[in-house]
Length: 543
Image 1 (cartoon, rainbow, N blue to C red):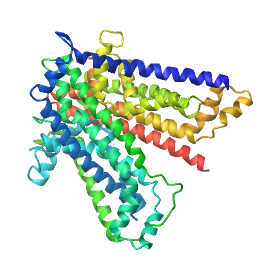
Image 2 (tube, rainbow, N blue to C red):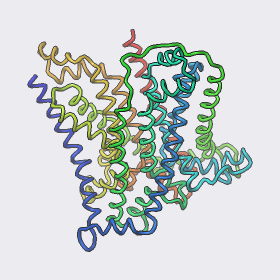
Image 3 (cartoon, rainbow, N blue to C red):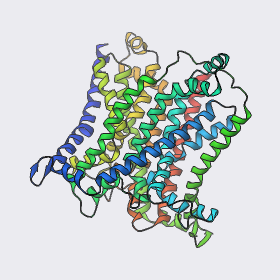
C-alpha cells in the first residue's frame, strides 16, 4: 500500500505541476498584463476599455445573441432527445438522429460561417433553390444560425444522457392519479430535467459568448467580444495590454458559469433504479416528433451540403460542371497540404498526451486513498478548464511563452489543447474507474504485483472502451479548434483551422472547403475505426 500511495502521489504532483505551469501561471501573467500600461501599473487599461467606444456595445451584442442561441439550441435539443427517449419511432430512425445530431462537432466553427455564406448568401446554394435570400447572413441572424448549429450537439448529448436516467414509471403513476397530460409532462419529464436544461443553457451561452470562428466569417459589422479581443491582439494596431483586459472580461462568464453549474447540481434528480416500460402508443406524438426531428436535421445537413458541392464544381455559381481540380490543387500545394499533415500530427499527439494526463489524474481521484481535499483540487481544475475560453488560454500562452524555446512550437499547441479540453475526458475516465472493483489493487499487492503492473495488466484492459473514447474526443477537438491555437501557431506550425483563417482574406473559398472536407473525412475515419473497436470490446464483455 505504501508503494501504491507513493506512486499515486508522484502522478498527482505531476498533474498539478502541468496545470500550474500551463494554466495557473499563464492566467496570472495575463491578469498582471491587464494592469500594466505606459504610466505603470493601475486600472487605466480597464477604464480605457470600458469607457471606450464599442466595447460595451460588443458586450451587449454578445449577450443578446448568446442568450438567444442558447435558448433555441436547448429547446431543439430537448425535442430531439424526447423523440429518442419517449416515442415509439423505429430504432434505426433514432440511431440516425443520434448520429446526425452530433455531426457538426466534426467540423471547425470557422467553417460553419463560410457554409452559411455559400448556402444563404445572394448566390448561395439554398438561395438558388428557394429563389430568394431567406435572411441577412451577416450580423445577428448569421451568428444566431451558426451558434445554434454549433451548440445543438452539445446540448443534445447533455439532455439525452440525463433523460436516459429518468424513471419512466412515474408517467404511469401520474396517469393513474388522474393528472392531465400537461401535468404529467411537467411533473415526470420537465421537473427532473430542470437542472440539466438550465445547465445546457449556461453551457451553450458560454460556448457562444467565447467562440471566435463563427463571428470571424459572418459577424459583419455586428461586433462581439471575441472579435474585439482578436482585433486588440492581432489587428492592424495591436494593443496587448487592452487585449489582456478584454481577455479578463471574457473570464467573467467563466466564473458565473462555474457558480451556476455548481448551484444547478442540487436540482439534478437521481433515481435509485430505472424501470423499463413500454411507451404508450401515440401515432400523433410519434409523427410530430419524427417529422420535427427530421426537419431539424435536414436544416443542419442542408447548410453543410455546400461543402461537398462548391469545391467539386468548376466555379460556383457560374460553372457548375463537376471537377476535382480544386482538390488536386490543394494536394499539390505543399503550403496547404502541409497544414493538413500538421493538423494530423498535433491531433494525434494531443490525444496521446491528453490520454496519459487524464488517466493519471483520474487514477489519483478514483483509485487512491488520497485526502478528499487533494482530490477536490483536480476536480476544481476540471471545472475551470471546462469554462475557461480557448481564446483566453491562447493569449495567456502567447504572453508567458513568447521569447522562450516553446514559442511557435507543436509542443506548445499540443499542451494548449490538452489543457483546454481536459474536463470532459477526465470526467469520463474518473467515472469509469470509479465503477471498477475497488479491491483489485489490494488483491494484486497481496499477490506480489507492483501497483504499475496492476494498472497495466488488470485496470487498463477493463478501461479500453473509455480510453478509446478519450483518444477520440481529444483527436477530434484538436482537429477542429481555432480559438486557442490562432494566437500561438507560427508559420511553420500552422494547422488547418488557422490556415483557413489566413486564406479567408484572399477569398480562396474552394481551398477553405477542401481543407474542411479533409478535417471532416479524417474525423469520420478516426471516429469510425475507434467506434468499431469500442463496439467489439463491448461485445466481448457481454459474452
